[in-house]
Structure formats: C-alpha cells, structure tokens
Length: 148
Image (cartoon, rainbow, N blue to C red):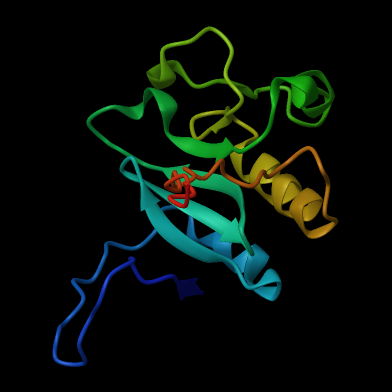
C-alpha cells in the first residue's frame, strides 16, 4: 500500500513519524490490485484510488458508535446502496440526519461480508462509491492593465 507524503519539503535526513496501522487491514488487502493509497482524515484512515476517495476506515474504542467503513458516496445513491448493504446508515458523528458519507457499522452482524462486497463493487468501478474531493481552489490575483 502506498502512502502519499504530506505536502511540503522533506529532506533525506528527516524521519517521517510512523502511523499506526489502518484498522480492518483485510479491506486494503482486498483492494491492493487497484493500488490504493492512504492518508489520515479526522482520526480515520482515508483510502484513495487515484485522486478518488473511496472510503475511510474508523476504529476508535473511546467512541465506537461510528466505527467501521465509511463509504464515500452521495445521497442520490443511498437507496440503491441500501439494497446491497441493509445495515448501512448515516454517520452520527457528522451531526446531520443524512450525509453523503455512509457507514457500514463494525458491530453489524454482516460487517465482514459487507466490507468484502464493498471492495468488489469498488473493483468493478461502481460509480456509487467514491468521489473526487472538492479541492480548495487558490484565488489568483486579478491582472490589471496599468497602461493608460
């Protein structure tokens, strides 16, 4: 699995602090043939394929309610995804009734089966899972013509 370096300048002498391993390693192993890469995201491990974020893995013992696999999707796909994942729900910690992100809860009886199914859909390039993050665009200074 690849990890993208943080933006900035790093010299060869600098050691990058090791991160703790991602939870649910079988998920990343199932996606290995797609060359996933990870980065930290709000205490979770975000998993990307190319520039598309596909999911986040969360396992926080102190706050287990939203532990599991967070699927990056949109509300347009919730109904159809719920047919594949009957225990899928919105993420409570995000504070909204319905969010674009959806959770496959780690404490659901079908968690591992759902995780494997999600990986299969991702491998099939199912358009319901994954999205390119909205990047903050830099404002460019406007050019003015100083000639009179």
